[in-house]
Length: 492
Image 1 (cartoon, rainbow, N blue to C red):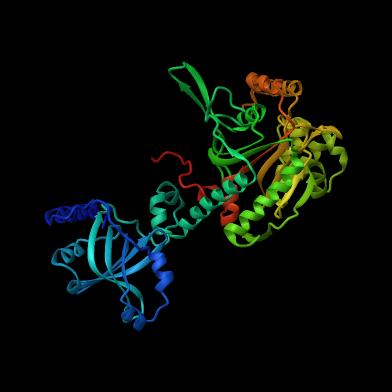
Image 2 (image 1 turned 180 degrees about the vertical axis):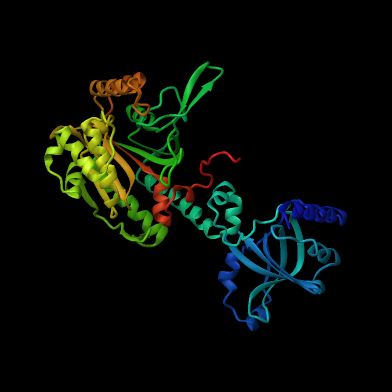
């Protein structure tokens, strides 16, 4: 039967409910029990014990299974991620309640009250004595919805995905626990949670292409933020020594298994610290989260066993590039040698790419996927780090690290550049790249430079990708599986 025919049948049942005086979209229902908790507390009790204890319960849920026979029916109610069978028998129900039973469909919501028992086949079940109709489903659940696997439907109709795949609930419950754990950890460390603008006159804090919008009253273009960094550092200038924000960022770039145009980041800043302090803090945060959320510091990710117990490996950017690919140091200073090495490794680069960009392409293509165990890649070239402080021992490098786990970047941190004159020079270099056509180059932000001229103390800052962290903790290969409503192409 086509979905449209089924919808027509359901509309007839809707009218039948109304004809009985039953509200097909009812008001509140006062439940006191949850399916999962009932199963945990009483699901192992034998039949005789349940009969003796006469345990009453009241719960609500969506019908995801329905078997009728004679003057009775078994229904399976889904309550969040949990399910519990209920027994609807004519002799145990009022006349109207039994008539309602005859109009039930998969997908409908009902509330029930009754007693726990075991069936002849020993199934843990609720024997229903009172039935309340709560909401009529006019659309049937999709064909083969038990274990829905079509990714387009799963992502576009997440509500169906959550019905069909109860395990998906667990992913987003874990996500919530991770965010709550991060917030609790930072507050415990005396950080202040703040909020910064999502619409900004100048996008900053990252090298990325922004989304543009227009404010009619101000008659000006605004940009959805690509990062909160420059505003958080303004707060350090203003005298807050430790700040953090769990924020939504927007970057107008490609979509992949690890990129979504709208994503969640944690950013935090610590006055009087440098990037080495953040290495220790990051290890402590991740191990705490693993223990609290997973109960262990060892996790499985895409067939790899990953150990989050500290300490983690430290490896310089240049040394990692050379050692992984068994290259000579001459590639670090000779563009032609670097081009030849890239070609040999099968790494495509722009014909007029600068030396540092060639090396960075090689790093991203050949090194990142090798970084399975937690690894801090340190000492990035200054050209790749327009907001990071120069390294005292080598001004061509910066005091920066990126954290890689499972072959993916999870965090980025550095000792912040607080020299306003140096910052202006780097902004001007980025501005020149943008004028030459680089849509991801950093904008020159005069107000941020003004803030730095009021003096920012030595500061370390870090950004952690929440979505990628959730992917790691829940063993998901695609970022779309950890975002409730990922960005998709418009429906045809």
